[in-house]
Image (cartoon, rainbow over the protein chains, first blue to last red):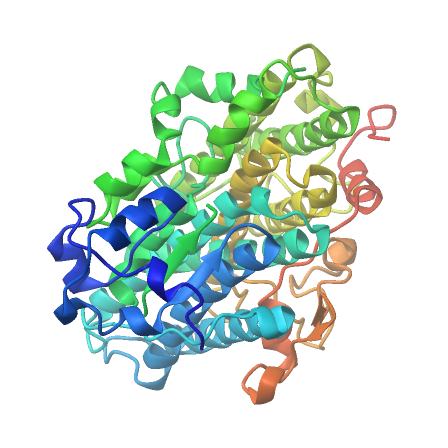
Length: 233
Length: 289
């Protein structure tokens, strides 16, 4: 893949992002052009640029940016479920294994759908970092799955209004309800009855989360090695 | 009605709404924790930025119509669950997890009613009381409130219809801040649907499996609910081409079977089809048009 804005996105010594974040994910945000220039001017340290040379850019100026954002999240989810489905935790029941197979193919289909829909506008493949997940432990896998699904629902809910194309809004709407079904299923596996409980679903408004892309990417960052540059948010 | 009303309605029950509308602050706060803290950032940037632009502008009639349409469906759902819980006699929903789940869902539907009603203000449609409804659907489901299994089967139909109905209105709401709220309701309906499906599986003792997601029926038909009377709820759910992209076996992924392709995208339902379904559960003279 090509890094379109390599010069703009080099991580810096700026106090905005602390070293902890840089070590963990190299994820950074560049929502404001001026801030990006300032970051670049502040310089960078060589020991932190290994991933910065292979980043991807999500440009939210148009629908392609939103679709690539969804594509990035679906890549992450698909990679996670492929790994779970190929070697499920020993604590999984037969039914759980079967449903995680289902979810795996759903997420792979979502990923490939966005890839095809975007065509040459698609970002490259992301490198994932699942070192924080213990894939042999049912509890760890379920916790990660819940985080991915709830985050995915919030991401689509928050991004929908950015889409200008009815076709793509509808496609996103078709996907988000399936993510919500996944989320409900996984939540119930962790604790039956938590399919739609607070704080994910507000008990006073009955509304699910709607999250801004920078919030979502901050949360997803720990699972992504590839640097994601965000512009025109 | 004024678009900003929907925020004011949220504020009534969520005093932190405007604080939540600042996602950047939340983003920094939540940088290292994607669990509970992310919940604080419940509202999207888009809603916040559009808020000021929208203030003082009137809502297009088409959007008001969509919200009233949604409100009617929420009334229908709320009365259904509320009667099961509060009717005399109450539906024999087992105590414990099942009763708690139906209560939670009822409370969500009431919250949706209140949110939409408040947002619409004077433009809100008349309330739909329980007396306007007929959940037996003209005698199709005579035991809907006396047999727990029938109750769950009809509940699944309502939830899956709700998911489809919101999706079907997406085109009217493109770019409108109301869309975000509609999406936030829509995904909750999907969570409800998934759980109701699981409850049905549990009730069968696992002998009949209702996947949390809409799959193909046992004979490959679009309706996977096992209730042929609700075929209309699932018409077209077996679609496998999305935005011109064929999903079955996509890009060499043979694991994406027809069933997987059906499951991984929920389909919309147009307004007329939803109204046809909703009217099955309304008394003569009280039907939607």
